[in-house]
Image (tube, rainbow, N blue to C red; front, side):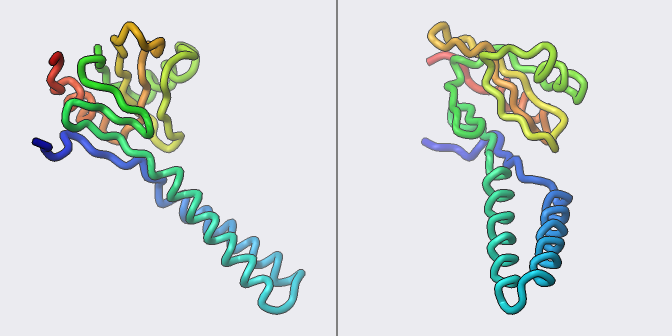
Length: 153
């Protein structure tokens, strides 16, 4: 039986990025319309706007899901029995764990516009990954969902 997700978050880019990208495309249009007469400027601008939208949707499409005994962060998945200690991190702790105190073997799903994260210890002896570090807008809720996962078979 499949239940609904215990936690589901899309790491969408902030509105600020959309506004800045739109201003960048507007500046491109202004330079091209002056340099190239006719509809070419509009075609170039439309292509640039389409590429911008595609890039922002793609980058912000990463999902963090806890459901049916599994934890999925981006394209990676781990079964609940391999999830160890879970800790919700504040901005400073996230900065340290993703920088100075980082382990190169860790799995990272970080977004620069999200300053908090959850550190999830991996307890699978066959997996060399010591932990996952996953950005979240609601790290406490994600940590609670991970802690509530049923362990063992």
